[in-house]
Amino acid sequence: MITLAAKDHYETLGVPRDATSEQIKSAYKKLAKKYHPDVNKASDATDKFKEISEAAAVLGNDEKRAHYDHYGTSEGQQFSGGFEGFDFSNFDLSGLGDFGDLFDMFTGGSGRGRRGHRKGRDLLYDLDIDLEEVAKGTEKGIKVHKLAVCEDCDGTGAKDPSDIDSCPTCGGSGMVRITRQTPFGYMQSTQPCQACRGEGTRIKHPCKKCTGRGAVEQTTEIEVKIPSGVEDGMRLRVAGQGEAGGRGAPSGDLYVAVHVRDHDIFTREGDDLKMETEITFGQAALGDEVEVPTIEGNATLRIPAGTQPGTVFAMRGHGLPNLRGHGTGAQMVTVKVKVPTHISKRQEELIRELEGSQKHKKGWLGL
Ligand SMILES: [Zn+2]
Ligand SMILES: [Zn+2]
Image (cartoon, rainbow, N blue to C red; front, side, top):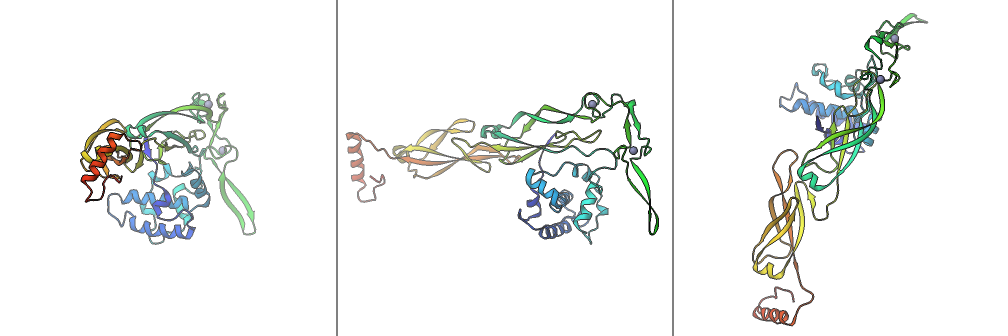
């Protein structure tokens, strides 16, 4: 399953990339009030609200923001699960507390589940493609060296499921209760179990291949479908193809940043393709049909009589397919008129004759 990566977080909040945290906070509050599903009944309000909240939770946290600025993705552990079960009724619209609250709400407070390992890291892969591939869409096998789920133990870290036992120290809860003496008396608190690192389990015979880690480093080939009309700089998300999490934890996502190589003939403008073609002044004056290259091979362009240099013709349907299915762009052809630098005696006579017959007007050949 491949999806387009989420919109740029800065764009989502409508703040510049160097926005202060105050600016981010205030932009977030304004938008969250506008799109909160309790208030806004539009069908896309929920999605929009999630988008806004995700953007704020990332940009409102210095560490997350730095990671995002670098990779363009949110660090693996936080949202994918969290948003599924996000309950809007818990969201205090009047207070819209500070980022600390918001962030805790999405991460369950600690960024790492009470039990088990954190989600695997997200990966970023840069992929260069040609404009022809943008036109048709393509499939690419990309090789990624990463921490992958151990196949011998299915990521459990144990040779056999019966080798997994509950942790004797915490009795399987992953947490231990500690009692401290303070000036106010005995205080009880709980903290993650040291023996099992909060997992609640113990492996009697760890998997030999991954030494109980549940993941091994290896190079994996991943098929990535690139949709036609993809834009330069766009990130595609391949869910679950990032690094393996620890034992039993979900894998991160793979982000593929698409870079479209420059083309010898065409420049792209949205879904349109721009190019130039040269015709003779005879063709410009009298009209003609000329062959021009298009992204799908040659096509015929009709030049009407009296075409002026610099005229732009739109060849509808010869551009790029729109990524979101809104038709196909046009090929915009700018006509250049070639003025010969070497002409024969006979040609010169003809041109002079033509100039003579046009003497009362401005010479249209500029000779
Ligand atoms: Zn334990
Ligand atoms: Zn293993």
